[in-house]
Structures are given as structure tokens and as C-alpha cells.
Length: 279
Image 1 (cartoon, rainbow, N blue to C red):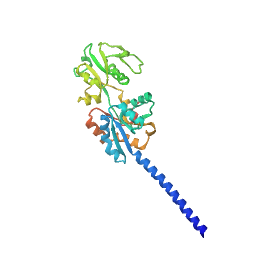
Image 2: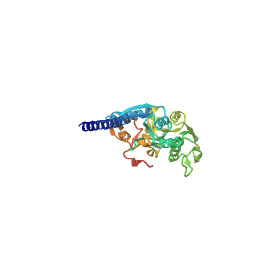
Image 3: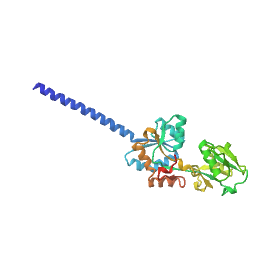
Image 4: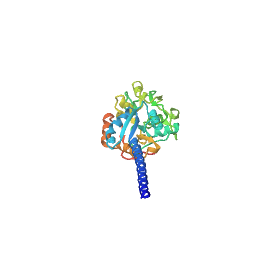
């Protein structure tokens, strides 16, 4: 009888131990899931407009978020790469991949892609490229990718000709300049203010909007920025996670897009398919 009672007590003790162990694992798993639902998002002032547009929709799916504001896009990527935040919001995929090469990071853009913006040739003095006088100054952006796009806009407009088979064009690659234009390189945000003094300038739509100018008032615009998607950037391990994909999908929502357009009219175009991007 004593032996049978001892066996029953041992069995109960084992079940209790197993139950406690299962409960511990369950609690640990739940805590890990709960922690993952608190998504820290790095972004600039522009990114915060995206965030505020989708926050309610995203959090209605059960996620909690915290927006962490930074002054520049590189710092946002750094915050994500270091693990300080889970997401870097609103930067371009190609910019993130370039950041990886320079910093040994592993960032990527979550699909579906969100939106893209553009670069245009603007003038406050002339309405067409034909009106731009000989010897005029034209401002272009001085960082590698944007200078390349700026110069190709000028080439598309017939103002200059670039050498063939150039990957990232610079002023040194101009082989024909029939109007003897002076191409002035400067930091991208300064090109908008350069419109006061120069004949024309290549400017981001976003910078034109921030300066209170109409982004759609360009003389000529780029034809390549559709291949520069903006959206949700995470570490490579997170790029297919449910929480990241759910956030990216919010940027495809028509109500979210409407809110963004209310703040930034004529600035962003939203993808309907990832196939629009040539990678």
C-alpha cells in the first residue's frame, strides 16, 4: 500500500514538474511574441507623416509601435542596423543597400514596396529649356546617385550630352554642352534655395514641397525614380516576418495613401505592384 501510494505521489510530482516546465515555456514564448509586437520605428519628419498615416490601421492588427525621430536618413539606417530600432521607415531601398556596402550592415526592404518620389528640373525664371540662356548656371546635387540622376535629366532635356556607358555620371563626364552652361554641384537640400539665383536647379519633389513650392511645376522630370522604392526597411532576418510585412502592406492601403497625399500633394506615387520596379 505504501509502495503504491509512493508511486502515485511520484507520478503527481512528475506531472506537476512537467506542467510547470510547459507553463514556463509557454510564458516565455508569449513574452517573446509580445516583445516583438512592440515595434520601434526610426524615421525623419517625412517618415513620421507615413507613420501617423498608418499607425491606427497597423495597431488595430494587434501591434504596438514607438516612433523614434532622427534628423537624417543615414542615422535612421544606422539605428535599424544597430538594433536600436526594428524599422527604418521611408528611406530608399538602393540607399539602404549602399549603406550596407559601406558599413557591413544587412538591411533590406520589406515587400510590398510602398512609394517613390521624383527629381525634377525647376526654374523660377524660365518655363522651358529653350528659354534658358547660354552661359547660365544650373544646380545639381553633389552626392553620387543624385548627381547621376540630375545630369541624366539635363541630358534628357537636351541641355548636355554625357559620355556613353557611364555608371554614375559626374560633371567630368559631360562631353557636349552646347549652351556652355555652368553646372554647379551642391548639397541636395540647397538646390531649392539655388532657384532664387540660378537659371534652373534639379530638386527632389520632397524638398520642393518642404519649401512651399509645387513639386509638379518641373520643366522636365526623371524617368528612373520608379526603380527607387521607398518603404519599410528592416534587418535581413526580419524582412519576411509577419509584423514587418503587415506594416509594408499598410502603405498599399488607399486610406493611408490619401492621408499621405493630404500632407504631401504631388510628391509621392504609390506602387500597385512590385513588378513596377526594375531591380
